[in-house]
Amino acid sequence: MAATVAEALAVAAEFAFGGPIVSTAPYGSGHINDTFLTPVGTADGPRRFILQRVNHQVFRQPDLLMENVARVCAHAHAKLRAAGAPDARRRALRLVPTKGGQAWHVDPSGNRWRCYDFIEGATGHDVVRSPAQAEAAAKAFGAFQSLLADLPGDRLHETIPDFHHTPARFARFQAALAKDGHGRAAAAGPEIAFALARGHEVGVIVDALRAGTLPERVTHNDTKLNNVLLDDVTQEGVCVIDLDTVMPGSALYDFGDLVRTSTSPAAEDETDLSRVRLQLPMFEALVRGYLASARGFLTPREKELLPFAGKLITFEIGLRFLTDWLEGDAYFKIKRPAHNLDRCRTQFALVASIEGQFPAMQEIVARA
Ligand code: ADP
Ligand code: GN1
Ligand code: MG
Image (cartoon, rainbow, N blue to C red; front, top):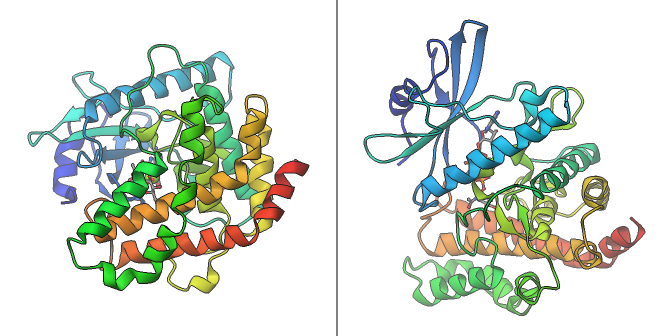
């Protein structure tokens, strides 16, 4: 059950905002957490905050997750300060402490809540509108990976084990299909066939990670377009958000999810599949933006696999939507009965479009 406004208001009172809370209201289009926009009157004038209840069905170890988030925020701000970056307050998330000085609050039912400064004058877009936006988003996520390359301390906690283990996602899909616990498989024949026909290539990235032919890095792991806020005036990348899945991974899944979410003119849940396609100018802009900030650390093999990564994660997320649909919509928030099946169809239509343009994508990367 989603958190109510009344619950959010009660929890907001626990945070050290430095003034009275004006109101709170549900905000954004994320599929996982419950997010509230919370304006507050402070001594310095009105300010806004993002209050979030962490989804602990999805994140089974929310305290470890919050440890990761706090470390990443602190490191980002330390580096921005050291570099004398202008506008540093907007460039990385900052956690607002509780009145007791904690980085997060635990409510009486055991839910974890946290609060961030609201990044003003910037927007997370659900659908890409221009190559300039695609370029800015990719540059920002590349810079984020670069920022985390020297994160001090222990390896980050794996907030969701095997998050981008595509073979494990495939196995889970096969198990859900075999069980068909909600009698839904019959309604998804073409999607199931599409998925089963692609089982042979799911291991390419994780196998290479295991073999050491691709490096493990600290990555974001949820780099969809609306998880980076772009400046409303300049369209530049301002701030990478949604840090819940920052953990060890492959840079390729990060680039791939940009391809999934920033090359098609259609929304993730578009039902008119004729609108779903990879637009090469957007892909070219992603490659340009990503290489602008990541060229210095990527290996030749990582660069070579950029087009494939786009295809693989689009397939993986399509598979996850299909699996969730077969399992009765237990994971992703939905707004209509077949929402997850619609999302799966959109992803698979994009996979097909990528497959049709693969040589042109490889050509773009080779030229860059
Ligand atoms: P979810 O995991 O559910 O996607 P997010 O952390 O991405 O949660 O937050 C949901 C939405 O809230 C984002 O897509 C973005 O629009 C908005 N948002 C989150 N944090 C901030 C912030 N600090 N400033 C402005 N908007 C934010
Ligand atoms: C979820 O949290 P959000 O909405 O940014 C999901 C991603 C999926 C994405 C699909 C923790 O991202 O893995 O790619 O939906 N996050 C988690 O839109 O599962
Ligand atoms: Mg999000």
